[in-house]
Image (tube, rainbow, N blue to C red; front, side, top):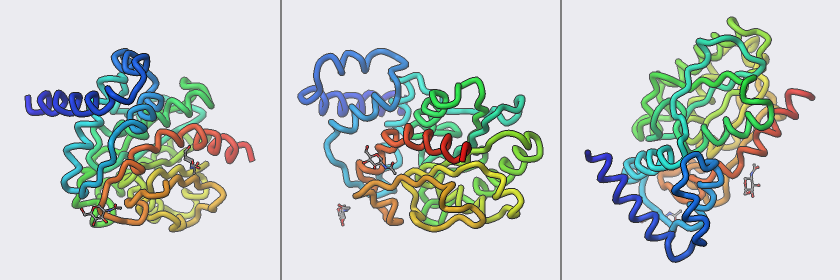
Length: 258
Ligand SMILES: *[C@@H]1O[C@H](CO)[C@@H](O)[C@H](O)[C@H]1NC(C)=O
Ligand SMILES: *[C@@H]1O[C@H](CO)[C@@H](O)[C@H](O)[C@H]1NC(C)=O
């Protein structure tokens, strides 16, 4: 019930803010389900008034925004395809702080769409990180230890179960801390097997990943994103990484064919 009220209030807030600025045709397209998420997001964010709220205050807003976006776009927020059959490509993704499901909404689903466009969606197995709190406390502590251990396990599982798959390890926000921590736990034989790493809004921006060459790592960190400076404020620049998913998918393709 609380959730519905939040959604309702947020919808009013967002639509109210948008109403005066967005062309009517765009507003009409919001009401259609399955609008491509990155299209939806770029229109939404471009027209959202600036926010500067502390991380602790912003989590309920992020959770609500994500749920609203998931409902309006039909985005799937839970993926467990590592247990299925091996595919040519495998993506293991860690979501951002306060995001729902095991892949969230703001970057995971648009990235999977972009990778699907690049490689064909039926040739990709997608796995979110389970048992990962994605809490503010764990962000402040450098990334949830349980989620980091689980992602390391999932990477090992992918390698032993599907040695011929090309593995893409990816994360958004605290999810990038999870990627850094997970990779630091792995033996070099495993990390050198990883095809590429894609990081969006990385709090450890610029920190090298052990045994992963910089040439295999794509990092998007927007100007003005305080989280990329390991800061405490969520600014609009931290919410717009869906605009970088196409370049990231192209990067993954280029690295794999190099
Ligand atoms: C956000 O607001 C706080 C105080 O409300 C201020 O200290 C901080 O510098 C602001 N951050 C940015 C990046 O604008
Ligand atoms: C991310 O997208 C923005 C906006 O299109 C662009 O300016 C920036 O160069 C992109 N960053 C990366 C790393 O691709």
